[in-house]
Image (tube, rainbow, N blue to C red; front, side):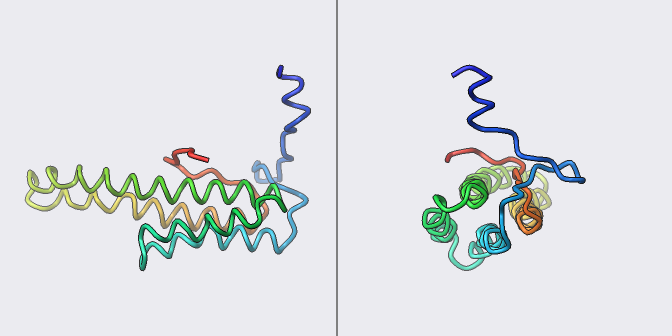
Length: 142
């Protein structure tokens, strides 16, 4: 497939006045569903590894209905998996740094949690506006 065919098959989405790509066909129910997929990251507070199943099930049941939900679902799942990986990495790094700095370095372990909260809020706001969103430091698995 050459570039011309790829452009015809997957055209670029329109850009709004904020300079963000958006889906003009996404109705309010699709936008709300996408918001809930992003906000499911809050479930990690209660049931860490199992919480990934919430957006996975939500995405899997509706991904065929809307390209908007498909895109936001993939992004939310990838981000939740990435946050788990980054939490493990930062926790392992914070131990020697914390020991060397008499406990001050343990703050490094909070970085993925802060990134998760900020990213989740920004993604939910973008989904509510009908915009596409890409999380920072996201590893693309799906």
